[in-house]
Length: 185
Image (cartoon, rainbow, N blue to C red; front, side, top):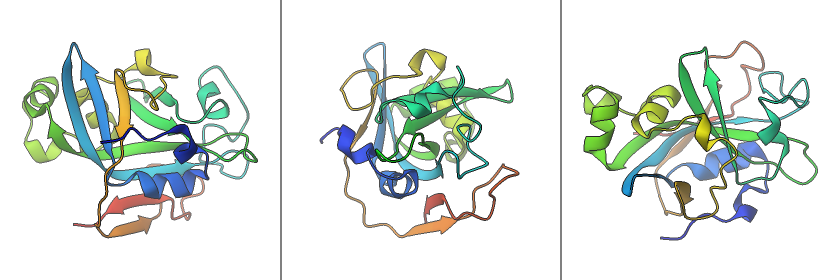
């Protein structure tokens, strides 16, 4: 399989969010490959998107959203869990990213079970904090280049699944935008 290249992310976050569905997020930990099929994403823009971390301008926390596409933006949510985003925006947009909200586990399921305290398999990676815990994603992976093989990258995969666009969840601003994408089951 082929690693998604930088030009894949040089598009609007809402387009990239939809196109990431069905791709494979790969995490390599101490030589072990842990991966999953991306089944849910959310797009976040910049000035025009009040729900985005980039809406009020660049800060130390959200700086990756303003930088080169194809890098990760990892942050801690509610002081409890980490969330993984991939920076995506056009040359005309000053910032943007795609939150990876859920995965279908593929490789390293025993590793995921251990990291998630042996919770039911269907609950291993069905939320952004859960998938980060299962794949051992933390702030050490912030600003990581996902277009190169290494400890975190995304593989191309063709998927003919039905994709559904819905309003984003867990936010108070711009809730009406249908920028959450899910593979319908």
